[in-house]
Image (cartoon, rainbow, N blue to C red; front, side, top):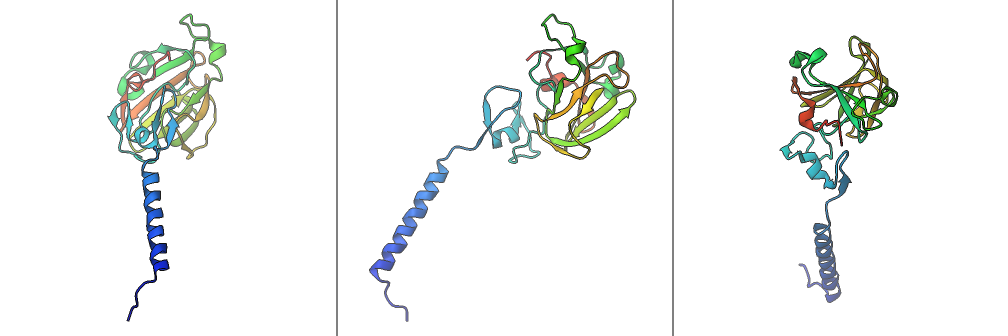
Length: 210
C-alpha cells in the first residue's frame, strides 16, 4: 500500500515542475538564430532563408539553412559589365547555350577591364554539389553547382577552389575568372538551369551592378 507523500517530497516535486515551466517559457521567447544574407542587405532567420528566396516558395532544403535557389551575382560585390547577353551570339540558341558573360569594370567607365577581371573570385550563388570538368571545349575549365532543382554553370575558369563532388554553400568561393577554352579575353560565362531548362540568369539577380 502506497503511503502519503511527505511534505518535503511534495515541495521538491513542485519546485521541479516550476523550474521546467520557467525553462519552457524562456526558450519559447528566444528569437530564431540569425544569419547574414550573402550578397544582399539585411538578414534572415535560417528558416526564412531556406524557405523563401525572392519571395518564392523553396521547399528544397527547407529548415536546413541552405539556399537552393540561385541569387545574386557570381562575381560578388565587384562592379561588372555584361559583355554578352542571354540567348544572343555564341549564347544562341538559348535552350542550349543560354547564359551571360560577365567581366569586371574596375574604373566605372562601362567597359570590361581584362587585367582586373583575370583571377577575380567566383562565388556560389546557391548551395549544391560541385561538378568539376577541366579543359573542356568550348567552355575551358568548367564548373557546375547542382542541387535537386537548379544547376548553375561557370565556364572559362582560370582555376578551381573546390573539388569534384564537394558540397558547396552559397557565398563560397568556387573558382577564379580566366580565359580558358574558346574565349577572346578574361570573362565569366554564367548559366542557370531549372529542372534541365536553361533560364536567364538576370531573372535570378545576376545584375552587373550591385
